[in-house]
Image (tube, rainbow, N blue to C red; front, side):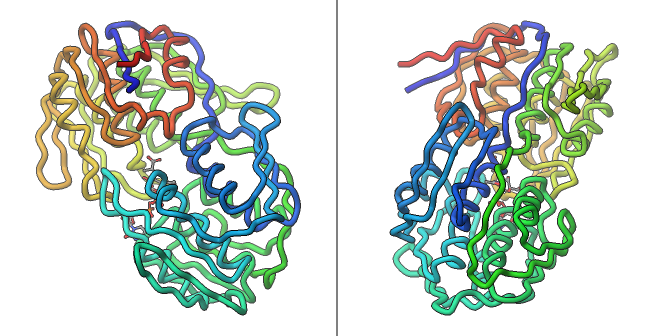
Length: 427
Ligand code: EPZ
């Protein structure tokens, strides 16, 4: 089993290229199920979840090929199954994203219930309710969502009781092939959802309200869609993670390939803590974000996770690691998931002074972290342990790094290029 061995205490410097966003790439891979033509995707992050989703599409009968790094060409004209099996879905809950496309294009599908994960129960009831509103007959039996819409889906008004990122993407994709108009009220505004909507709009689908909480889609009545080649947007969570790597080691680094507004909520917090940043654009309009080392002791701050454009829950663990180096008491309130503090116990093993009261963590700093053996529990928690290990005195070992490999492309390579001392070992 692979583990990372990190020797802490090194200042970072230089540039890091931000990869395509995993959470944009996954719904885009599902979107290929609506394509009439060969579906060309560029700037995909080569991470485990992308590989798994490719396997899922292949199991359904699609042809998935890659001409070079980060590219996929997907042909779904030969789909012969609409069943997403438990063995795939249990490994990657984002498989639920095939529900909408399969149902709207083929009129039936069976998708395994994803089950819970480390950070919470993560039900998919809102996805199921929405598909029923669009006219599907859905039965949940034997751990599977069994859905039928023999005459296709019918546009409807969908009100989400809670904002759901993949739920919104699922409904947008289902509505694109439905008959008539669908309105989504209380839609997610995350950039990853925006890209799905923009790609459909560029392919000729009538969509209004993109990036707002109310989206209107006029469906094609099962007419499959010709898509233009697509370039996946940069990963704002990977970017935030490297910003925290620079911040926790008080380094001067540059992040290449950023979209300003996607990282603004994190940057506001970094400025509060005491860091200065600067955006620069090159002649090709590629944005670089420069982080400067702090000149004063880092200040404690308060963070509440919320939906976009608020502070992202996927950056909560990373900022908790950073907060251990801030003077005073920082407070982090997690409002989206009921069990997203699994990294606290592991950060405490490194010496962090953290107490939890319900969904609020209090981090007392500044504490000197000491290298130790720790265990990753979920994707973002594991990145927080890497950040803590970068500043911890001595050597840390991080186990179960398959969590990391799901969503961070070439993590140790990128960190070592910045001057960190990270080794991937096996025992
Ligand atoms: C997406 O998950 C992301 N994953 C998550 O990133 C991210 O943490 C989350 O959005 C919130 O931003 C992908 O995009 C692949 P939700 P998703 O549906 O869509 C509740 C990472 O680290 N809910 O927006 O599954 C749910 O329990 C991952 O990259 C229901 O109750 O999240 C949660 O409390 C982790 N019923 C809240 O809504 C439903 O049917 C938000 O969940 C659906 C969701």
